[in-house]
Image (cartoon, rainbow, N blue to C red; front, top):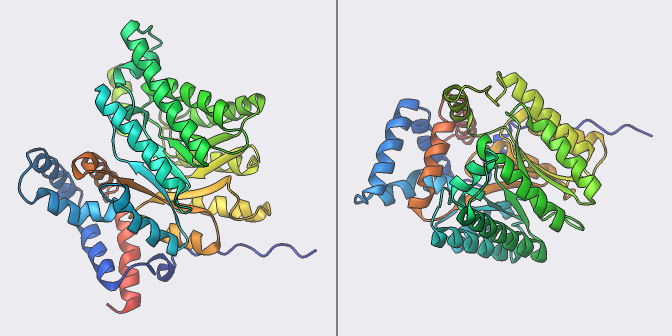
Length: 395
């Protein structure tokens, strides 16, 4: 029997990466990413943008909508997102919807987030190209409750009532997702509130992840303990007779985690070096692919080598490329070289599409701009691909 030919994935193929962009859209992207390639400008612009939105200054909403919002957000509501969803699907990419709400505290706000997420699940069920909806526990309960549980402190009567309301909210969402055949990603948070979230998501997986995976937890593999947590959760799932849902990310709170560890004098939970995180992340990818029958995973990474690793493993193990347990995901508006080249090759790949009113998603947009400024090299890399395609087209 002839060995399988080696998988040749060219993530530098800008023709495929930007085939869905017109010349005008491509030039607009180039202008925006050049601005974002200046960390000082991003820092000043972020502060001014947030202030302008909070003060409701004239034209501030229009300016944000025409720049960052247009690039990184699907729309202000679900119906607004349909254009982006259809556009992605025409280019063989799926959509993961994420309502841009976090850090809510009043009962009215918390219920609104739950109801909006249920609406998104129902909307996804009517779109074959939207297999998953994402949610944040910090949009469903006052963070004080999670912090106390993270410190293993007893909750008072009122706090216990709030926690039970959280359980009811998340159960409502998970049961609806399971009923309609839609996946629900639960985002990771800071280490000091993550343990109670893990406990709650494990509980929901045990209830709803039997015949099909409805609920996914998120593992931040820049944390020293999270690869072992992933393996422990898998062991627990196998013993409990359910499928583990696992979204793998590197992590989003590195500076905050290290600063807090220093302030409170405890060892930082974050790996000391990027190399350690890369190794741990890739070990996590390898573990999920090798155990794909009992783990439904999503490789939610912008790292070229981590995406290449999963694609190669699927190929080497002779697993069907679009197996429902093996998925890739990148953020809307970024890393099109990964998304559309993976899609072209026939893998399950989605864009993570946030949506919501401009004021609600501004914190998300600011985080995107800061995280991906030239300090990380992300913007320079993106700009390099855009410029290469502009040159290829002779623009």
